[in-house]
Image (cartoon, rainbow, N blue to C red; front, side, top):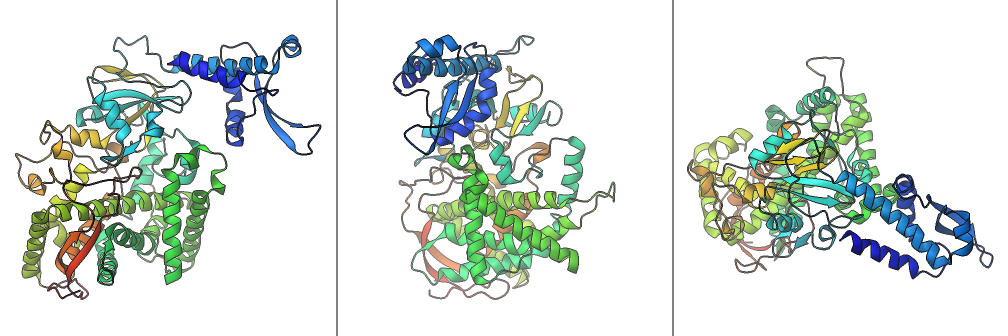
Length: 584
């Protein structure tokens, strides 16, 4: 494979009849940053540089890639030969560097995990060309890689010249990620990712002490008491979105639940007071921002702050900054943002979150909590439509809750204690369709051993939720139907100790376990409880058990049509979510 890629580079260079190789402008910026690494390789042909030259026949400047070749070569060699030497020099430097970073640690007897590093420069091309499929959704690359090795619980791959080891299975996840802050630390393969995400969020803090106190401060805004206080707003937002269902013949549940979680984002998390036109703009900006985080084109090209995602990030930051100014003048208001802004460390009251830390972690909660809730609720809508017996049981449970509590205000305690089947529905949805990718990347600061294989110092380390859930011995079947949203969707399995899944980590594992998990679960339970109370029945418009298709790219898998439904009966809502269906 390395010889093939080197040959392609040489062919590209020799076919260019002009003096020096002129790459696309997007490549030039990358090459500027990489020129020093090219020069530090084993090649002695010279240093690659980017220059701006003015053509004799044109007034405009022309950016070109050149190489500081020995002067006698520049005089006697033709442009194609010089270009071949330039590209060959770069390729050899990259290849030699790759050989160093992908070599096993000789001080360990354990071998590297199985797997394929792919191309020397880009890595595994399949990650770009076939990262998702209509049949299974996003994350197809990792499922494919796992299927090609003897031990699918640990394998290696390469992404943008960075070697990574993927682990799955609770035993392996614990072995690797219990060393967080000791032998592995979080990081990012792409600088633009952290810039779009907020570099002061819990996701990227590498100092143990700082991470601990920051989790304590953010955690003060996510306590059970704080979630209880947010419940009226969650119920109000859910009812408002369910009210809109009756206005449409068909309803795309992805849009409905996304609007609900966006309502939670601006009303509950950020404490904003938005007008109708501002709500629409806020939703679009959040969508643009999240879209940039999962779009490699946005992350790979230079100037991320000038992209649609970068501008959306700036919009959200401005909203948060203005809100903090308002909090400084008027005091706490009960929002999650307010809780973080005024939080004081119990161990050291002098420690408070900086404005930058508040901004970064507020955005983290919007992404981790709201995006998780919206995607899971979309999949749950599909699953309930494919498994009508489950929807019937969900409705029956809510009737029992109403019989016990009447039309009292829907509380978190009520949902947690009196709705075990509702809890099982959410868990089963997250078991089958968890986060599709890898979550936050870690890097080994020293070589570690997992499942009989070494992960050398410098390698990326990640864990895969889908593969962990899929290979859970408590639920696994040979034909993989236990991961099928139509054939394997069995919430009842969570209610019996003998059938309950044993490997379930939808919100991550270890010190970086998602702090927004409680809020996300409260959102999902509130919406589904009210949906079951108010919707008499519904049918899927496009999907059938034999024909379920998925979007190829998303953080968490979603049905390709967004779960379009048609409702046959809907009850009117009072403040607490009444039952008793009336025609739509």
